Structure formats: structure tokens, C-alpha cells
Image 1 (spheres, one colour):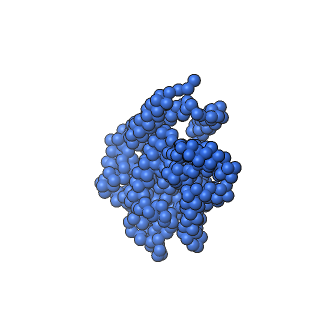
Image 2: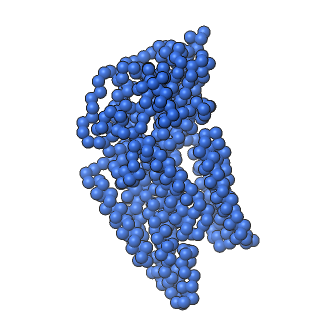
Image 3: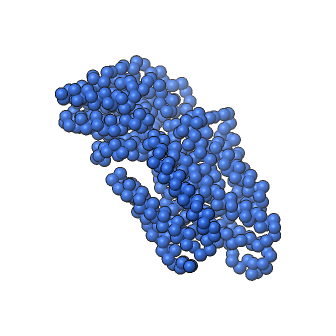
Length: 489
């Protein structure tokens, strides 16, 4: 039974509304879960409508692939720990870029084979002139529409870069690769590889489509994604994840134009726009311009010798730290990736609840790039049940640190490092930070004396008003809870 095209278009329209409304609801922690559900229903509707297209072929294989993908996503979503969520996001994002690149590759290879065989090219690019075979005969090979071909090649290029780059990001976050990989003349090599890929793309766009040229184009595109991501340092990873998210959305949208599929166009444009805005916000939080994010050497250190840090790290016992905060008026808790690794968010919230019960005013301060992906700390705190009105963004909490009695830093490092304001030679110089050092007293929960993910020594740990509570985050939070309850007993 052939379904009316009007009904299919209506399904796509409803799916688009669900995508947009779902994304809007994701902008607030209170409605984010519902937004994800709305967008999920929109995607389900778009997939069903696509399967109902009258000219759809291999429905059985497509449905089987969808079921395999859903099963894998369901299993990984339930099994992957929250600490591994950034690398899972990077991996899933790469799969989207790879799918878009695969569409472009399939169409280009198919057309190249038709050109070799001398058969009429299939109308897989809908923007191709329909009357070509009528004007030139059935045996004539129809040229691809310049618009369709350009979009197909561009989508394939961007998708390939997103795919290979996201795989490197995944490997770095998973700990399979060193944090950074640089070599002399790296920027020149990157530009040459990109230029070669673009030249081959132009050749493909001009209609000179051969199997060898298509293969060389994709090899260079994938290589550029690898080379662009290898020098990335850990401090820049949130920016990179959001950047590749935008790339994937653009690639999907371009391939949607090629296939004339409204759902792909709208979904890709929404993801691309959201990813671009998020990249801008992350770049601002890292004090980087978009140009620097796209073409700079991620994580490269600035020139000059680093400023020496005077003083020493001063330890504190859990009992003393608990007393200090129990009799404070204002306490600000600053979570970081170390809290996620220790899975300490529930104990930290329990500690905060005990403080609140004693009349202490408690807030949680969140840096835009805390953790290893945007919103990582917000998700962890929400998972532990922390009320949204206690979670404060960097711009709003920074003016409050001078009147804060105790700032409790648990697992955060680079986002509270004062050298971002004082040391021009530091790789993070100019990055907006949480002004934890301005608090009257600072307690830092940390496993040891090592540096943070960016590999930079933290001057905060040596400050006169800072004390170090060494140990696992969850164990330390548990000790603080126990000491507070002892005071109450």
C-alpha cells in the first residue's frame, strides 16, 4: 500500500516541530528530560515516515539495522557510567558524521560506476535535471546538478572530518591515546592535507568523478580529522566535542538536501545550529575565538617561562574541615571531574543537606566547561537530586565568593586555577575561572598532589587561605558527613 506523499510530509512537519520544541525544553534542567523524550518521538516519527516512502528499497535490511542500533544504544546507555558519558557522546556524534559521509560516498561511487559503464546515471541526486535523458537519449549519462553535487561533496568532507576527529576524541577521553600529539610543522601539514582534500572536492564537484578520486578524497578528509584532533589538550575537549557536534549536524543537513529528505534537512540544521551556538559559548568560556578553535593548535602553551608558585600545600583533616563549614554562614561547593570519577555526587549532596539543616547557606558553583563535556556537572548534580535553584553559573556566583566563608572544591582543578588571570605564559591564561581564591577559606578535596587534566600546576592549592583534604572524593565526603553528624550528636 502506497502512502500519500502529503501524509509523509505531514509526519516530517510534526517531527520537525518535536525536534525544535524538544531542543527548547532541553535549555532548562527542569524540562530537559521531557525535551529529550519529545525529540525522541520526533525521530521515531521521521524514521517511520521515511520507511513509508513509495520508492523505498531494502526495507527489511533498514529495519534490521535500526533494531541493531537501538539495541546497542539501549545497552550502552544503561551500562556506561556517567564518568564515561563524554566519550560516549563523542563516539555517537562520530557515528552521525560517519553516516553522513557514507551517504555521500555511496552516491559518488555509484555515479562513478555509471560513468565507467556508460549507463544512464540514476536520479539519486534529486536536484539533477529530469529532462536530460529525454533530450540526449536514454544511453546518455546525465550530469549531476552542480548544487546537489557541491552539497554532497561538502557534506561528505565535513562528515568525514567529524567521524575521524570524534574517534580520536573518544580515544583521548577513554585514555587510549596521549593527551596531545604534536610535531614540527604540524599546522603546515594540516593545511596541506585540507587543501588537497578541497582540491579533490572541487574536481569531484566539476564532474570528474572516478573511483580513485573518490577514495583519495575520503582518505584525505579522514586524515585531516585525525590531524586536527591529535594536538588537542584535555582542557579544550568540551569545545572540541561541541564543534564536532556542529559539524555532524551540517553534514547531515547537506546530505538531506542531496537526498531531498526533509527530516534529515531539519534535524541536521537544528543540530548544526545548536552545536554552533554551544561551540561559541564554550569558546568564550575558554577565552578562545571561533577562528582559533577551528584553525589554532588546541591546548598549545603560550610562549615564555611559567611563573614560579611560592608556598606549600597545607593539609587539613576531615574533622577540622567539617567544623569550619559547620559554623560558616555561606558555603559554596565547586564540583569537578574528580567528583565524577569518585562517583561522589550523592555523598556531596548528603553533606550539603546536613549543612543546610544547620542553617548554612549552600550553593553549587558550575563552570561552563567543568568536567569533560558541556553540562557534565549539571547532569551529575541532577542525578544526585540537587535542587536546580542551588546550582549557580559562573557569572552569577563569582561576585559572591568574597563574602563566602568557605569554598569546598571537590575534584575541580583548571577551572579554579588563578594563573588564568596572573600568568600570561600559561596555556589557560585569559580563560574565565571560578574566583574560588577570593573566598575567605578554601578546602580542596583531591587524591594527591598531581596536576589537573590540562597538566598545569594550580596556584590555588598553595594559597594562604587554602587547605588540602587528601583522599578519594566519595570517602572524603563521607568523612565530612560523619564529622558533621558527630557535632550534632
